[in-house]
Image (tube, rainbow, N blue to C red; front, side, top):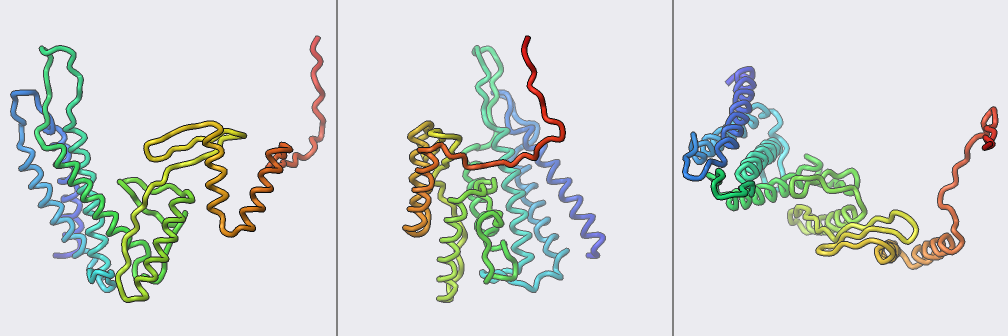
Length: 278
């Protein structure tokens, strides 16, 4: 197959996949007692065939980049193609599951009732499985061709549940510990493991004696949240000296109402005169 033919076929496959997606969402629910215009399982079979062909076609188009390999022995381009198709397959099944969700929009028994034509729970499980597979594969593709280079913190783009992880300290700290464990594994000749983020919660201060705290199964605000934010930040500092210096500095600012930011504003050419009220 020539390159021009392959590119045209790739475009046609993407258009076909979008059409199948629209057709699936239209038959995801029907009125109770009716049959869908098209069978969802047949559309899913056609969709899976197009996705498989698209993945193979992407690999053939980029065959020139098949020299670099991943730790599991697969080539870099195969991994990229697999990752892209995993993401596409996940988004398609997730859209189908959302379209098939039954809406509680009936107020009387005489109104029409819509029922799903697909197994929503099974689709959700498949979406979770694809999300995990995508995350594990994507974690090995952060620095292609350079397994000795690790990226953590704000420079690392890692998805969890279909959304990128926020650029906050807990994510960077867990990534740093994970990279250290992976380095120890690679020194022993063992493959690196994918990063799996465990959400400890979120803390944010919004003023004096005021903060918000969101912990797994618990959320609160005010002075208790502010004390928790203060304690966790001091404990997370490295070294007793750093903790003591920060604690004394914060205590001084808290007691004497010191301003953390001082802004120098240049004097205006013509001073503003106060307006006297009559």
